[in-house]
Length: 228
Image 1 (cartoon, rainbow, N blue to C red):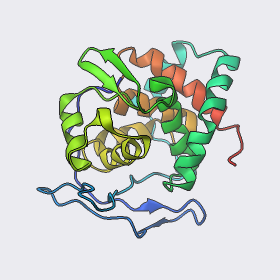
Image 2 (tube, helix red, strand yellow):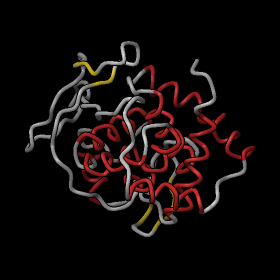
Image 3 (cartoon, rainbow, N blue to C red):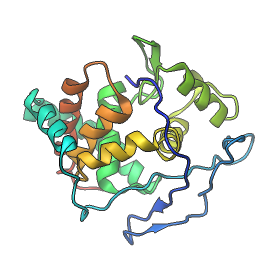
């Protein structure tokens, strides 16, 4: 269940082109004005995609690798359970790649987290420490919900669809969650390590080490499923 917001740095980051492997400025990319965040307002939602390090980048050493080791030591889901979750999340991952332009490791990381948070049900509501979490990523923090509503032209999280929730998640990664997303990437650039880091730093579930370990296992299994 997503926790409180963490201040990040404003910045425009380009879309990743999975075909060329380059970061390019696509036709829907834009940067929000500080006093006027993007919203639909009858128009197409403009999303600035987060920057993602390529598979060739070396993960940073030190504290983040110690974190990953600690996550693994908590115990992972059984192989079969992880595979079942991965099979359920595969189409969602493929959609993130093809429709939203995300690189495969990041798509797998987001899919693993959404699978474990909501079962990929954009309409599900659960109870949590900060109130009721809702949607794919189970946002609970009032500030994030208010930001979501502003981003989507007045539509609340509870009345939104999967597309709106995904676009807002990408907007967060490039803005209010940019700092936490950078920390998540330092855990590792492969799908499993990124899923664990994404859970720990960005989603921030209640049982952080346990849940991060589960998402590590699901993303590792998901990475073995061919992209359609």
